[in-house]
Image (tube, rainbow, N blue to C red; front, side):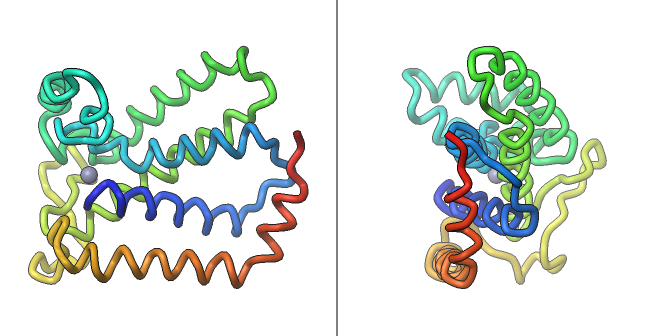
Length: 192
Ligand SMILES: [Zn+2]
């Protein structure tokens, strides 16, 4: 999947779960960081390819990205598995707790959940593509949805950009419109 689809999918997953498990109180700083963490989680698995957004925006990023990709076993390997989820989940948790003293009002647990939601959404979305995802590494088998490869999506082609992505956007608009009161009540309860 392209980075744009992953961004929208991560936000969609976060919105759905926030509606299901609305936090009782939320600080603005936590909300903003959670949104950022969610987007980072949504693209983090693609850190294993030099064309990833992170590497594209860094000077000499292409070379660093290549080296990083090799370290992670190549594209759609460790970072695209439950092992990768555990590894990146652990690293992000350590980082958030390290940063907590300089942002004591932020609920790092919620920010961490938002990161994980983004990460899992990435693995799910990539499972819809022809290549599939090696969810159960070290078992070297790539799983896909639906299981028949022919029925899955090719990254960047019309089925993704003209059907799936617009459908996600329409779903998000419907979600916001149909749960407008719940969203506004949550935003009204934001603690500064
Ligand atoms: Zn990916």
